Length: 434
Picture: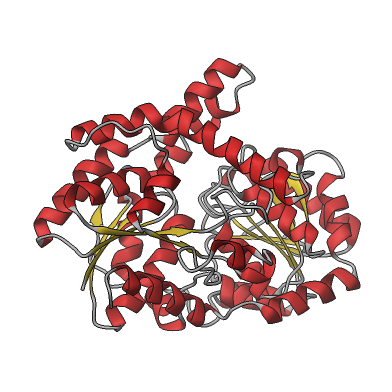
């Protein structure tokens, strides 16, 4: 079978799906890969021969539209920004995916992530293809998991989800119908979740059932919960992130003291890197701990640590590095401060660490609430972490022995990554009969 991966968004959106693509290829399927242009090198190192698809996700996340307009206090400007971001790159994704399908002579299945699935679904409908979507958090209406804190009970939970779906449809309906028109499809008044259900699409829930008890039973086989997806050791080796993943300098630093607190915000734009590092340094001083700061897509050079350089405001207490191998580094840490992206959340949980989730938007506050509910974390809005005492106070809540023990126990119950990836591949194979 031929499966076309149409993957846009940040590395956290794309990399888990690439793990599934590698598993499908190992099983003998033909895997054709399209990824956001800035992530082509990532997929190339994995040997997937990718083509660029959609728009540069790093440029979008660093744009005024995301960093300024989406946070505007002016409601009209904010809604316009939300609508623009929701459909950003859809024209490029549509034309690129059509060209990719033409180049390879069609496909059996289109596989997409959460981002861009509206376009992928329309293309699949136009070409008569089956579709599978990877969801890294709950995004469909249910009675089990609330998308916001403070909502209790199955009826209220489902009502909040239904409201969220209506809001999303209001933001994207016009843009979706423009895409459908470009494809020669008629306009629709039916929102995407219903259309995917009616088309028999599988929506793979790529997170762990231990965090959302009861959801798998509610949703059934069309939305299987697989566990968090991650690359295996061989794939990480091709990325240069296997083994220790640390380098001699960081190895020596890790060996020189107690396990540190990991701090990393992935692709999320840190508004004020110097202020964040100052807050990390102050929290470490207050609590008597060390911190390892991974710069991610941010530039900490103005704060004394370049995005890829081993430096920091106080070398003995705070170490700033570039990208690190979570699987190698997190087990050597005692807690984590992160943005609450699903991939990082899964890696931190698998390492058995309690966490402070400094959330920005999207699914991140939900993950913070789920960790709080499990007794293994706390959540704060990311913009508050630089306020005096906020980070230190949050860390103090998760560094106690009881929280650490709960985190270790939960980590031991998570679905192993290889089984999660295999389950996702099984579900995709099932869309086409084998």
